[in-house]
Length: 265
Ligand SMILES: [Zn+2]
Image (tube, rainbow, N blue to C red):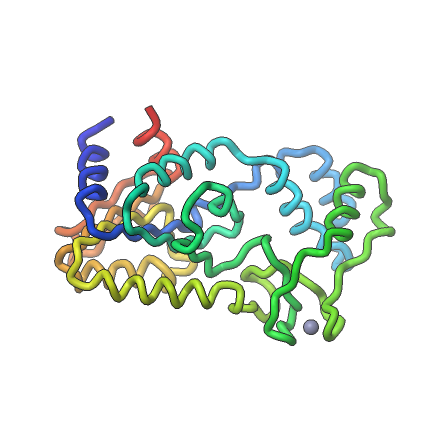
């Protein structure tokens, strides 16, 4: 373990509070799906056919249930170990839900981009989330296994207005923020408690896709809190602004590798 990692661990141990941001570069890369030959076949079969495009996220859900990519498991375990016994909060832009199977305290996690755990009406007509219809998931799995023809699949619909039912995540016509707002308010309360406290911030793989969720607010926190220190780990966008350069460190690395290499002996 190098000096930089020693210092990081010391800073985390020494901090009263630890804030973690996980960004786009931390997201699961879907390798188990894109390299799968049956999936490639399905992509060709569906093509750009609007009628069947809904199947793709169901296949993603299927693969998330089937495969726990070891690389991410190891990285999350390392992060969990680093944070144990600390007063922490994690904001994650990842939509792969991996974090929810990684033994963290779920009351200390918010995922504002959503994921694959609930569904919503594409138009969010009722402002309510719904469970994933098991029969739809089963049918997609059967189709994947070639036990059911494509034409037999029926897209699930909103029980209120009949619109498309979609996973509660960014990208739907009208994103149902109901899926995360309560956790977000816990987060903002937690943040209020960091004022003038010794705060260590780990920003892992946060780029500029949604900079107003993690990147810019974290910079602002460090700017105002003289006792804060920011670690920014990113393969390309690791730079820190001049105003906070003396209270932070940019590390040019893939954030998943960073955790695996740094903390796993
Ligand atoms: Zn509806």
